[in-house]
Amino acid sequence: MPIIKILPHPEYCPQGTQVSAPAGTSICEALLDNHINIEHACDMVCACTTCHVIVREGFTSLNELDENEEDLLDRAWGLEPQSRLSCQAILAQQDVTIEIPKYSINHAKEGH
Image 1: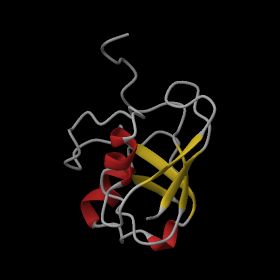
Image 2 (image 1 turned 60 degrees about the vertical axis):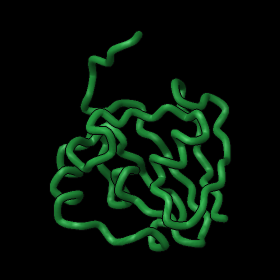
Image 3 (image 1 turned 180 degrees about the vertical axis):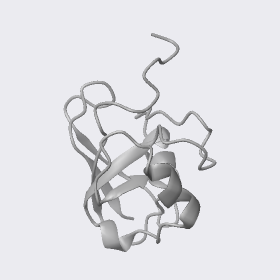
């Protein structure tokens, strides 16, 4: 099972952590299954950018971006060449390291 290394994020995992998930799982699903409550305002249907992550290692092992994801990423805060929507980034067999950006386009969150 591939391992996802999550770099420290002040809200979602202040110390950073590692989780494992079966190949074929999206990064977003793997995070949520392991109690890392990344935003996913569109309920993981590739309709927003709140689950944006930057893949620091293992980017090429993920499935290719489709046109819809590419278009949405243009609106993501802190976009980088290795940015992905975690709901669309599907794990293969290789480990990945991700960074969750400090901010998302969804500035006003409910439940705080």
